[in-house]
Length: 122
Ligand SMILES: [Zn+2]
Image 1 (cartoon, rainbow, N blue to C red):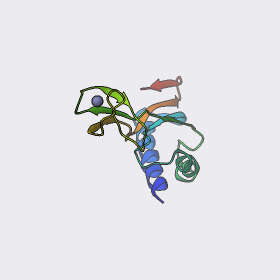
Image 2: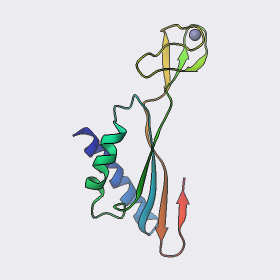
Image 3: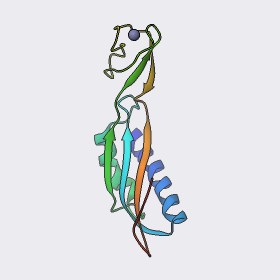
Image 4: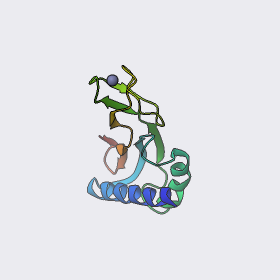
């Protein structure tokens, strides 16, 4: 299962971060997912409790944000939003486009609880 291994990698990153920051636990995690990343947000959500069990990230609120798909047109030079299954230029309709964003899987922000004061890392 693809999403479980992604989640395990994510939890590994979170554990590392918790150790570096001497955090007791992780409160909130924001992950940004591009529609073309090949990751299903729903599957990721289901896999998270399994992957994070027993780690400082186990009780964290997982926030999944979907990123827009954007393309750069090789014909007219415009940058525009596009549908994930139809990467056409929004300005001239040409198909000769290059993907600018939409295939990312990013750990956008993490909120940690340390022994001293809760803090946010960006
Ligand atoms: Zn164009």
